[in-house]
Length: 163
Image: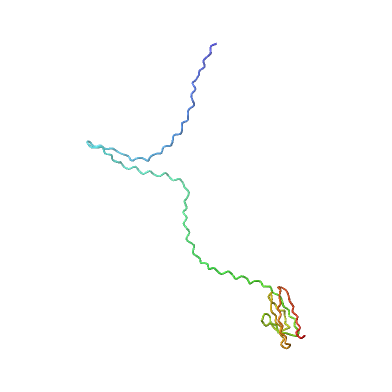
């Protein structure tokens, strides 16, 4: 059997994609130039009417630009510094001194005259040591004692002068 020849079409390579042409920047139009010739003279070139200046492209709607003015300077306020309040006085512990003296005596505490016994109320003294003087000139007695007062406490001194 003879082999039938098949119609063979030549294989064409696939069309190659060409890179996109780069955009060309348009040059501004040049002024129109006209040539004038006069017989026997050189060529001169004169400019025609100048072309109108290119208009800027229409502006797209742009956001508003807000220009802030600087606020006026604040007025100067002079503040006088007041001295801090004085600290509260320290809490001083106090105690009582009860005097039981017979028959009677003139009482001085820390060289200050307090009164004559019997006293109506106990003496309120600051905590610490105090000098107590008991004097009865009729009996010729002058007794000095040092007492130690404790805060929130009562100290009782008993003295019989006529013995």
